Image (cartoon, rainbow over all chains, first blue to last red; front, side, top):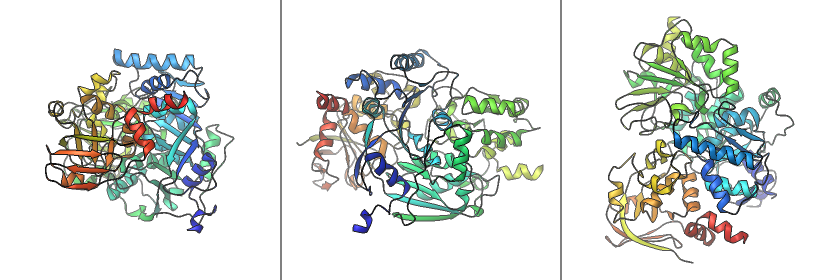
Length: 429
Length: 164
C-alpha cells in the first residue's frame, strides 16, 4: 500500500489534481478540493450558472480574468429566447468586468476558442459543456460540469473532485491517411462502449499519438466523454510547446506523469490496421467500417464542430472537394470552429474551394451538431457529420439519422451523395 | 439524516441520454416548468402522463449520458420525478442531479429486478431499494451525509446556508 502513496507514482491527471489541491498525493477514489485555473460556460449553460451564482449570494466573481463566457450554441440568436440568453451573458460579463467574453462574431465554438486563447498545460479547467474534456490535448486536466457548479466555481474558484481511476490507451503504428484521429477515437469508443470508461481518466500514449498534431489530440480527448470518461489527456511534448508558442500562450509549465505511474488497465491498438469508420445511429459506440455499412443515401453533410472544425480538418475536406461539386440533392454545411479558423481558411483559399463546390459556409458556431439552431433535419433524412453525437433527435427530427464520420469521409459523401469511404475517391484522382 | 422515497416506477433501459431527456430545441427555455413539459420527449411520448401517479424512474446502465445540460435533471424533477434509481449513471448527470436536488441512487441490478409499475421504497442514505411488489431488496451504493444534504436542498441552498 505504501508504495501507492509515494510521490513518485502518479500519472499526469493525479499529479495535476494533487498540485492544484495542495496535497502530496492523489490516488483514485480520493476526494480533493482543487483550485480552479479557469471556468468556462456557453450561452446554453451560463445563464443558469449566473442565476445560481446570484442565488448563492454572489456579488463578485472570484477572478474576472479566469471566468470565460463564450456564445456559440445559438449564434447568432435564432429566436427571442436565444437573444435573451445572450443578453443575460452580455450583461453579466459587463457588470463583472470579465476580461474574456466572446460575443457573437468574436470567438466561435467554445472549446476551440479556449484552446486558441486560454488553455495551458498543468491547469485545472472546468466548463459548462461536456466536451470540456478536449483540453487534455495539451496536458491540462479539464472536465465538464453542470451550470450550478459553474456558478459555485465563479463564486469560490474551487471545486471538489473524486480522483479518477485511469486507463492508458497506447496507439502503436501509424495512421494511414485518409484514416484520421476521428476514425481512431470512434474505433476506440466502439471497443470500450458508451459507458466503458465511466468516471475514468483516459490517457492516450504511444507512437501514433506522439506523431499527432494538437488538433488531432483535441479530437481524441474531445470524444472521451462519449465513453463516459471524466477527462482525456495526452502527455505534453515538443509539439505541445510549439503549439503554445504559436498561439502566444507563454509562459506555461508542463506536468508529466511518473514513468512507473499506476493504471487500472492498459490497452493497445495498432493504428496501421485502422480504416475509415462511422458511428451508425443512434449510438456513438455502434462503430463500423464505412465499407461495411452498405448503401446509405445522404441528404446533408456537416463538416465542423468542436470535434472537427479546425483548419486541418477543413484542409482535408477542401482537398477532396477541390474541382468537384457537392452532389445535386445534397446540401453540405461547412462551419469553421472559430473566427481564427475561418480567417485562415479564407487566406488559404479553402473557403473559395467550398463555395465553388457549392457547399454552404456558415458562421463559426456549434450549428447542426447541437441541433437547436441551424442545419436541422426533417423526418427520414440522413446526415453524415464530423460531430460527436448521433442520438435520437440530436439534429432535429427524431426520425432523422446522423452518421458520425471523419472530415474526409464526410467530404467524400458530399461528392457522391451517399456514405462513402474516402479511399474510393482518392483512388479516382 | 435519512431520506426515504416511496412510489411507483417508470422504467427505462440503458444509455438514456440527456438529449432524449430534454431535446436541445428546448434549452433556450429558462423556466423549469417549461422544460418539464418536454421531459423525456425524445424517448417516451407518454412520460408526462405516466408521472402523474408514478414518481420514481428506474433505468439500466449509464443513465444521463451525453451532454452536460443541467436542464435534464431539472426537467425530470419539475415533471414530478422524486428519485432516479439506475444500475449506473453518467458522471455529469449524477453530479447535476445532486446539485439541483433530485435524489439519485446507483444500484446495480435495479433494472433487472424492478418492473415497470412496481411499487418501491428507496432509502437514499442506506442505498436500499425495496421492491414492495415482488418483495425483493437490493443493496445499492450508500449516500454519504453531506451528499444527502445537497440532494435534499440543492447546492445553491447548501452553499447559502454554509456562507451565512
